[in-house]
Image (cartoon, one colour):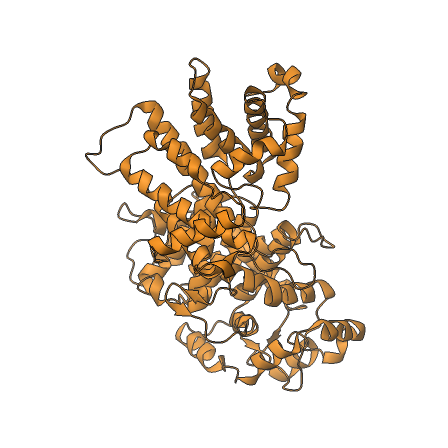
Length: 580
């Protein structure tokens, strides 16, 4: 069938593969969903280029194999095994000693206790069902030595120090961070064992080359973009991502079984694009995952617990960053604060000499619809508990713990992301609707940074740096604030509106990642500072307390905003030269 299609498409140069085993057409159809089209785009290959790349890969792999793999060609098992597998001694002894000294033996021994599932039978069954291809290679996981405590010294194929560090980073830092293992309860699933399953997930990834390379890609990308790690080859994560993407297209084109490991691999590619802040690519991978999840597994709730954790957290990360509704509809439902708990939080703050924050939103509530005002009130109640946690006052009141605060921040963020006023609600004028939407976007940004702040983010054991990070594409907030600023240039806003927009500009300044957005928000922040004659943190502190605290979201926020306030009076002369 493919040969006939090749003959017909010599002028076209693109080969469309079957979408399913029962498909009667090799092309896209109008009935295809958008999510399925995303997958189809991945399996469209150039005929000649695809063959050329496949031949190059076969020649290259005949001499070298990736970490953890050995060739088991049916006709020459003994010969291939003799020259392709290397003894454990080929690994640098100094590297072994150093890495063993750095390993956490308790975690690793726990992971090594259970039996390792033998996937060879399943692999051979799948290969037999697809027919025998003389050019294909059977890949088998090398069973680790039981005497080896260090989890990565088990491979017979020699590895370099850089890959070794990537694997260590995956187990001890990457996996706990992306699955939020520090939170015991997660959407109805309680983590029974405190031991991280990362080592077993690493072993399971060896069932397919695609899965293992995807794991390496995601871990190395986080090392580069989050930890600021410098590789010997600067573009190593991008190189791994390119190879992994080609393997993914090949995997989909061959109609191999759709497994949860495949979803995990696509999610690793999602993570790479997320670290690179390529939100369009993140959305593309997300649509692919949700289509495969709903089609082959019956929905998100049927995935394994740790894949659910990673997918849900990643989805909320991109939703908050882009201000788009999340792809995963399941919410982390939490109980609301009781009246007694809310009163206890406010009383504890006042007894400690602190003013409960959020009162400024009450003054701005005239611009909110009743439904939106209810959501804002819930955010303010949560902010009181967070303020108690930040101040270390939890022992003075009967308040929910940190896990509840993290879950509640996600719950309210979901409500804000999907917020729509009810049909029949009395319409505000256009200006008030813009103010309400500006506050909605600002609250999404603020809530996104709560799980990444202390004490909600665990600290690294070695450096003490918080392991959870937040990222925001502040363009929606910038566009909304810009429209309000332009509107108020031709009219005189009330003092409470100016204070609110002043706070929003400060939030955008400390939350933005892109330099152009940082500069724009900083310019607006200093402009409002001059207008309100606020030139020090002591003056701004009252405004900070009136809305939601900005200085506790990140350690550097206080220094950054203080510097901008001090320089605001000197920036007035260059205001006309600053681009809008």
